[in-house]
Image (tube, rainbow, N blue to C red; front, side, top):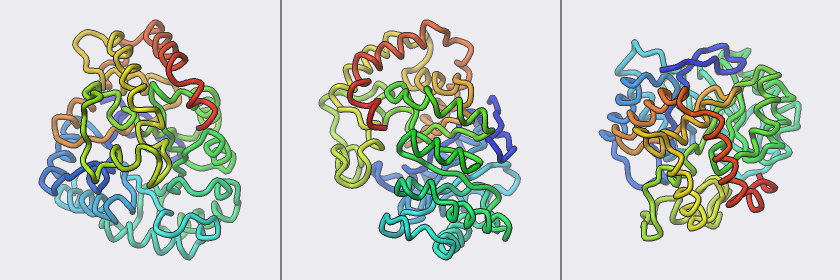
Length: 327
């Protein structure tokens, strides 16, 4: 597994990490044994970076990771979690007192005294420009509760604002159907030494190439209940693209996938090939997916300029008008 430095953390992490939203909730049912098997398969495949959040299953994802790492104390795994969505999304709730409460809960869930990386979890836009917010996070670093802090964002302007304030990392949606971060965010992050964590790399599974117009998602799967943004930002579900339009684009994408690779692997490798990306965090609902996703890193040398050009053509044809101006 290839390694890259995760921004200002200075820590080397696997180019392909593991997103663990699905171990908590909102992707159908994943039982505890399956969750442990997924974590084990990822580690066996060279993954050294897990991303979670305190609200994934109300802490279930964090607890599962904490239990797994406690049972495997020799593993060198960097764990990033996210805070901020346990209260109503108002800027005034982003305070040191609340940060301490949320961080302490995550420390208990993850069974550690000091969290590797804490990210603000897509807070209201004004939060990114408030110096007192970063001062509060810096206080937690000085107190030894967290090692580093970053942000998770919905929009590119939020990412650029956070970079100005010196965060260690920025987590942002980046995939073949969401190209806008390539224009400004990746160059700005690289110039500032900020790590980029690319999330939703498969557009909530669209870029796995496994779905059709007849696919039925479970009632507790956000791809069912949040398709129109009823529960949270619609950009998190299928990257905000129309499902049927996305299926058409996937058929175009399949035609450029290198021989011997899966559609998902090509989608992940394309992201990872971009200069400035520190790690890509696909989720996995079974051990096989975790292993296959991790193997995507082996494709980096097989995607050339022609592949890049075709990805941009597909994006321009299907998504630029509806996606580019919004996020």
